[in-house]
Image 1 (spheres, rainbow, N blue to C red):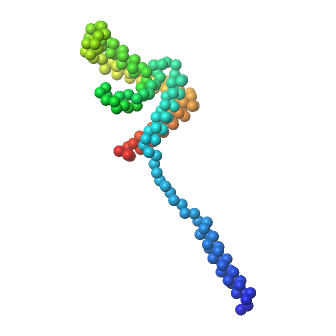
Image 2: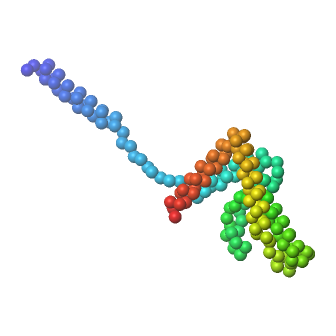
Image 3: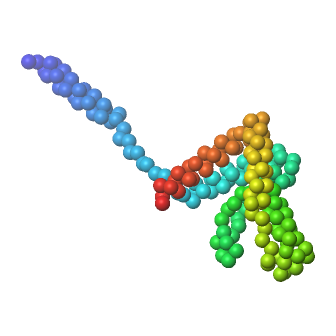
Amino acid sequence: MSNYSISIIVSLFFVNVVVADTSTENEIESIEVIGKKPLFLLKKDFIKAEDNFYDAYNALVKDREMQMDCKMQSIHDFTRVKKRICVPNFFETIKSDEMDKAVDRVGGRTSISNIMNAVPDNASARRRVGEKNKDMANLMSELIKKNKSLAEKYLAYLSAKNKYETAKKTED
């Protein structure tokens, strides 16, 4: 065998090795990291989406009674623990009206003893709130159908709420 044929065989051997090496270098090892967003960040996203939706809704509604108000409120009168609640403005108006009627039934004058002894008619308040809730739901539905921006904010609100509630259930 000549030196020429040996060098060709040796060079072909190295070419194959080099080709084999480059094919393994082209394969990329992938590592998947699976994580989840912390619950407090999901709650923060939910509150932000809720505020965005209700701010847009309130801007479109002329009747102040039908607007929504979100605030931190004590969960009981005897505690400092607060919870975020969103209620329509008519809720406070109805509550106040029912208390005024109860004071009138007790004695007619607004005094400490009359207020302490006054018991509002909860059935009447629930009925009035139920009627107003239906009116508000109809108004909100119409506004969402007519206003694309409000509809997008509503969908973002529902999505954020669903993510938060799902994560909260799995964490418990």
